[in-house]
Length: 373
Ligand SMILES: [Zn+2]
Image (cartoon, rainbow, N blue to C red; front, side):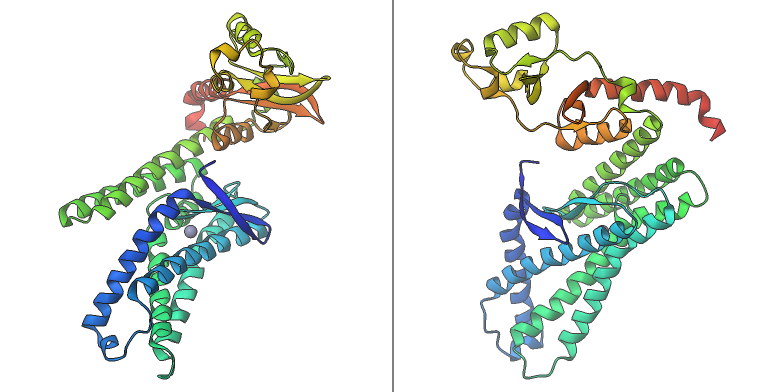
């Protein structure tokens, strides 16, 4: 998550930009610019002169593309909000955008509305821009007309592209919601992700034959996405009805903030733990792991206190929280352990392997229960 930074807030939702976007933006500007040069040489735009450099126009189009994606994601987030589902952030990156919507709605009808809102927004924006640009009076600047028509085409493309039933796209989600009305959510995810994989193969093969490697690349991402979605939904149903308190370790070993790193390492070996909450005056002030110790040279271990190397970002859950919440947080933040806190008081600790144990146990249990679904 460190690879993205917040640029502002819209309706209270943080909007983030991933570094990959900054890398791809000049490429898009160049691609759009080249396309504009092609248009000026081969269409009737050639008769009327463009004022700006085609590559500058290309850059403007690249920015508009990402604004269009932002609006698309914002639509998802705002409709999700009306269904009491919050969005942690919207991240713009290499392959478009991602609204980090916290939960898949339980109700297939709600999920369908959330999924459809994005493409619908793109479609409406696209059609309006296209007509405004095409039928604008002749005296408007040719550059402006070009940008508006282009914006229209881009948004229509976004709508169609997202509606392909290739999971995890919006089209895939709509498909799953449709199937989920007839069967279980889990089964619906399985079918929809299978359809997504088939589409990925078709894209991949078509892209390979036609030499369009961007398509092969996209196919690859669709395939990964489809597999991941399937896994997540399996894990979610595997963890249902399990709480954090069911698998956490209640007796937590801690270290004081002024303990030396040297002593910490000894303790790690003795206790066979690779991470500890750090306490100062009986209050948790951070968490320290083996990786933190590697940040300083070994000869400084004796005279460096744990508090200088510890991580002060404390991620915690409550004992009564669903275990799936803990799983999601561990995954999203890419961390190994979470503290279980109750109003500033440390109640326990839960690690990735605790959650994995829960998943494995449940999967074994489910083998018998499967037919009863
Ligand atoms: Zn979407």
